[in-house]
Amino acid sequence: MKPFQLSYTAAEPILLREALGGWGISKRTLASVKYSGGQLLVNGKEVTVRHLLQKDDAVTVIFPNEELGKGLVAEAGHLTIVYEDEALLIVNKPKDQNTIPSREHPSGSLANIVAHYFETEKIPATLHIATRLDRDTSGLVCIAKNRHIHHMLSMQQQEKKMKRRYQALVHGKLPDSHFRITAPIGRKSTSIIEREVRSDGQFAETEIQVVNEYRNFSHLLVQLNTGRTHQIRVHLSHIGHPLLGDDLYGGKRDLIGRQALHCAELDLIHPTTGMSLHFSSPLNEDMADLVQR
Image 1 (cartoon, helix red, strand yellow):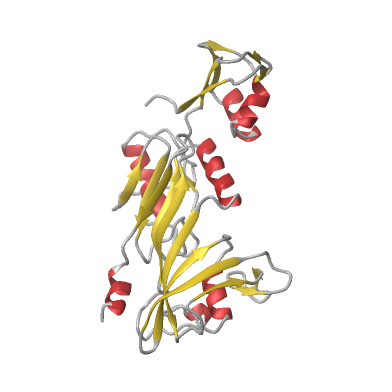
Image 2 (spheres, rainbow, N blue to C red):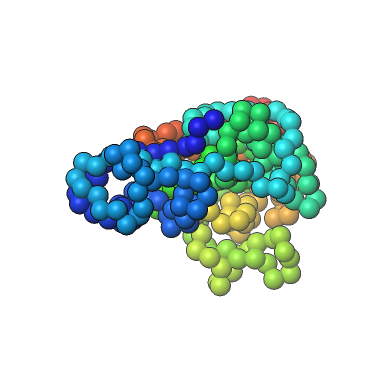
């Protein structure tokens, strides 16, 4: 399969190095182009980053093919693809599956299965997961097929141009139908896994909207404005309404056997075309059964 490449047009006289930075190509990505088999072409001729561009020059960046990390074992498995093109792969992760391998679950992760898919389809890329989900959380995951695309998606997240909305089932009834939780999150001093709201934590903000109320739980639409580890779980537990099934943060498992959280919507700007993309994923059967009773 031919290497991934992108084309640009110079708007004014400028050094190629500066133009590439303006087009969002990071120094790390540029180093991989220079030293790992990529090319920089201007009007079809190979040049260096010191080349002085003229207005309307055609610039082509040919990115080097990537190889899967040696520590990641490719494994055959079911993969639910929501969207795919030369830059992006959007998949629907089931519950009870790690996004990446862990010590407790070294195989069977989404990453293992995507690695096998890349090998089978001869996609010359390593794995760049832009949006991870906890093992119990189901729903949409965004994967970049190139280091540069991953960088562009990371910039979108930092600039809050990428939006993720979750459906959640929580204990009890909330006092307001639409509100925002702003509380810093950090690692709990007595645990390597658990997080908590603490004054020295990182800024974290979550928006909550009540979709429906039931006898002993509520159905919420939750939007992340930041991406801290366990953010939704910690914030909802902090206000006294932990996720159903989330026994790490105070939830009970009498109605469902895992944390009732599903990444249902993903909005992003395509990193090469600039088009706005929207993806959605229906609730898993276990959560759907509870809200349809």
